[in-house]
Length: 338
Ligand SMILES: Nc1ncnc2c1ncn2[C@@H]1O[C@H](COP(=O)(O)OP(=O)(O)O)[C@@H](O)[C@H]1O
Ligand SMILES: [Mg+2]
Image (cartoon, rainbow, N blue to C red; front, side, top):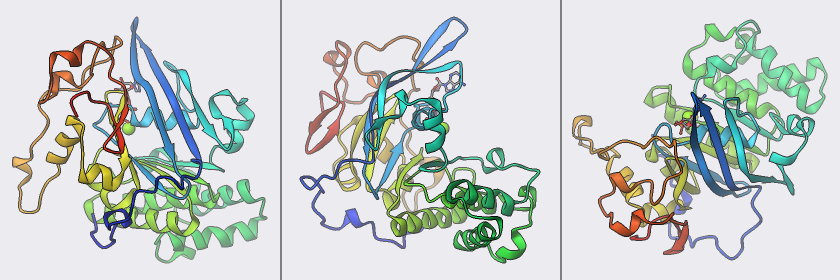
């Protein structure tokens, strides 16, 4: 992480309640199931969140908690055996889950773009990177070839690729992982999307490159007033990057609010556990505290709190009924004991 930027939310800025603009993307009660060998996995159960215009929402949780499938749902990219079984994804007054496929395709990559953890999978190995960016420009803006080339070279420069004119003719395998991720960002941004979904965009990269890529995303996001859904398993990453945070655990959002609300007053025992797992300066990785126990497999609808088996604050009442996400201390938390 680079510590260069001061997150606006860490200063004594009052929470932006009251003057609430309607969110650009609003997910309500999203449910995703996977059928596997006769069993149903209830991977995402009733996820709701808002992405505010021009802001970054950091979605945080351990591997397997449902971050990626939630993100894929926004663009209706869930593949069998996965299935969206309920909910709404409201974007500019329409529910993406109920649109016809052509309308979804028209949004995908143009209005809502996505970048993935492993850029090699999404880049086409047989075309130069310049060609791939130009294609994206033409697709969105209907520019001619020459104009698109110019914009593509500009984009390459903008995302920090040195010698862009020359790099335009490179193939994906000729670039380092960090450079490939920059190319992916250039492709995603070539279409001037109003929403960028970044699914663990820096997880595969080393720490220095991670910081550079996050800075880049943040700068472009601010410059263009773009909204960003930034997915990560690392709470440290969202500290400097996000405006809002949603903490996911085992297919549910367990806590959400602004960065300052979550960082100053985390309430869910899982969030508190995640904070304790962030390495501190001078603390060796060996001594890192982790939350004991494992994420449960969700082959049945859980009765009470899904975090119960790992919780340091648990009580019998936590097992009895489903726990709703309710407002406490001016943000949302799914815990009866918080
Ligand atoms: N292809 C698949 N087949 C079966 N189950 C899947 C598949 N992809 C995801 N799942 C289920 O969905 C859950 C959430 O996956 P995912 O969204 O990829 O997690 P995350 O991105 O948070 O690491 C997994 O724990 C698993 O139970
Ligand atoms: Mg994932």
